[in-house]
Image (cartoon, rainbow, N blue to C red; front, side):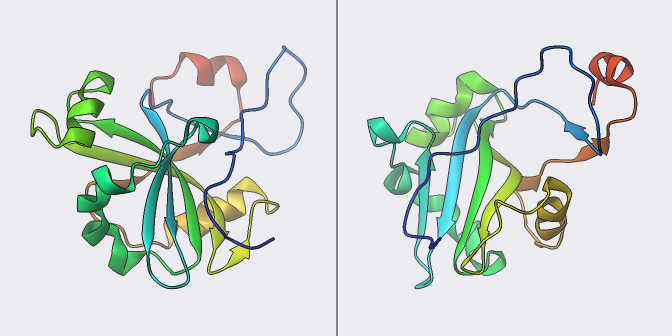
Length: 159
């Protein structure tokens, strides 16, 4: 698989009360807009929304963010993120239109391609390690996670 452009992003696994087996993690839910950041082999950076059938290419609108991530993101990388703002979800249109009413916050929670390699088949914990090694600066943040040991307790815990 080769990184050639935006992809249909991974979806959450539905939970219907079945017993969870194996190793799991959990993280806060950021209620923003899904975003994928792509840095191609030639160094070009693009920003795309989730609904590809609607052509959500936000590259022009969010290009002002490129200098903040350009030096820290390897070529051939696609990040799965959540676009958020200092004014919550309702401030995201301001971030896109650059009205200065709200400042951007980008929470990165997964990596699908890294250095031109498809890593989507790696375990999530391995992909999180890749993310942890990125030395990002604000407004980009790696979304923190915790080990899932007690499902009921984790649902009640505010992360």
